[in-house]
Amino acid sequence: MTSEVARHLLFQSHMPTKTTCPSSQVSDDEQKQKRENTRSLTMSGHVGFESLPDQLVNRSIQQGFCFNILCVGETGIGKSTLIDTLFNTNFADHESSHFFPHVRLKAQTYELHESNVRLKLTIVNTVGFGDQINKEESYQPVVDYIDAQFEAYLQEELKIKRSLFNYHDSRIHVCLYFISPTGHSLKTLDLLTMKSLDSKVNIIPVIAKADIISKAELQKFKIKLMSELVSSGVQIYQFPTDDETIAKINASMNGHLPFAVVGSMDEVKIGNKMVKARQYPWGVVQVENENHSDFVKLREMLICTNMEDLREQTHTRHYELYRRCKLEEMGFTDVGPENKPLSLQETYEAKRHEFYGERQRKEEEMKQMFVQRVKEKEAILKEAERELQAKFEHLKRVHQEERMKLEEKRRLLEEEIIAFSKKKATSEIYQNQSYMASGSNLKKDKDRKNSNFM
Ligand code: GDP
Image 1 (cartoon, rainbow, N blue to C red):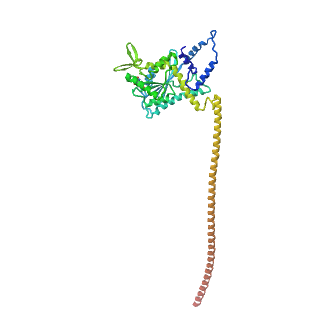
Image 2: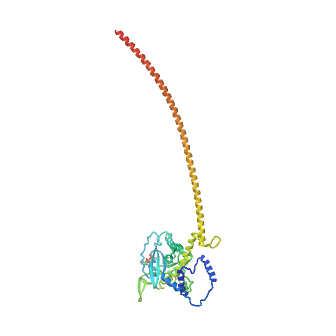
Image 3: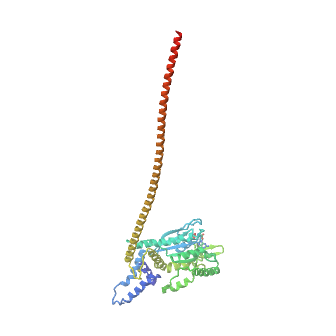
């Protein structure tokens, strides 16, 4: 069994073979110590566990493999064409417009077969990338998408009833970053995007449409790009050199980065062979001709040699980092206050304790606030009541004064009425008397007149 297969098998069973995380340094030391305490024995006869690698190979073949590629690059830079050319399949992606208001990530999954190996391939394409005025709007959706896939995996992993065995792992294993063949330098958007992605995904930069730049210019462009990436601190994926069977080829390919690629599904007859090429009035650019483009180098490195390493790096490096940060954010830690190792149970208990304490403190705070509020309201109500009472007293006093004034007026009026009645009665007596007196005078006059006639 080659070490490549062995690495793959170890990855399949999610037992990382190597890691860059500082936390796993501790477990490496522990393992070393354990190994030193383990005696090595030579078997005296055949037992049969030498077939273990074959068992694992069979199981892996039955399970199938999954590989997820993210293509980041401006609209029309040749992403879909290159993916079609890489997998020699027409994935039938529709041409996208330059007028999308936001960047969208479009994922499509295909099941491919080669011999008896099944590959579940997911191609994620950035739609509308670089078409916005605000650059942040271009790369943030890409970062969020990658994080969302890590989060989905973490949630599955944290479930009580996990089904990682048949879980569709959508974590991005490689990001093909398409650079325009300008011959100048990297655009700000490219630098910003790669910088924000490099700790989350394996980036392989490619110079797209390399047939439209001259060979001499391309060489200079490659050198310039690499020096710009280095000076900006952008970490791109390096083909691993720790496995001696592929160390040489990988080391030499690292020197060819970024690959300058040409894509085409059109076939042209060269000699007596049909080859994938782009035909121009002045000649034919053959996709698989190493003098014309680095397409073959990319395909070899991405699919034939390092696909497994890309998957492994995604799990042991990028996902591990995401998981660690996320769990730390949630308050989980491997060591206690005095650097004492803490188990998950202890961390959980401590967290629960902290949570209850915090809840009690909050409840107490709320109670205090409630009492304070009630007191304030009571004081306000008392003040309002006092004001109302004062108003009432004042009105009562005014009312009493008014009543007294009215009583006085009534008394005066009654006196006036009595006086008037008295006056009226007196005047009536006078009137009667004068009437009676005038009546007797009239009678006397009448009698006198009557006597005169007689
Ligand atoms: P996408 O929007 O990034 O997916 O771009 P496409 O793959 O749809 O390609 C856009 C256009 O560029 C099409 O007309 C392709 O034929 C053309 N194209 C794709 N790859 C190359 C290439 O390597 N060189 C040149 N000159 N044109 C290419």
